[in-house]
Image (cartoon, rainbow, N blue to C red; front, side):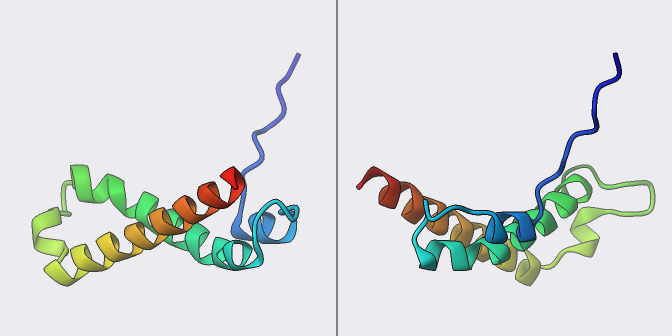
Length: 88
């Protein structure tokens, strides 16, 4: 029996099919959170392991690192707010 391909979740899936489980301000942040998470995931492999012609310390700047940190912190804060709202 063949297995069906795994369906990936996109930011459109998160915002358009999210039930009213989340507060509007949380739902409004989901597309940005998905975009940030996707970009950080794509960059992580190169940043950690490099490649033959890609040396991370020569490609990324302190400003790149600060942006990644700030955006990851924003996503973590949104997630914490969502969890807190669900607990209430």
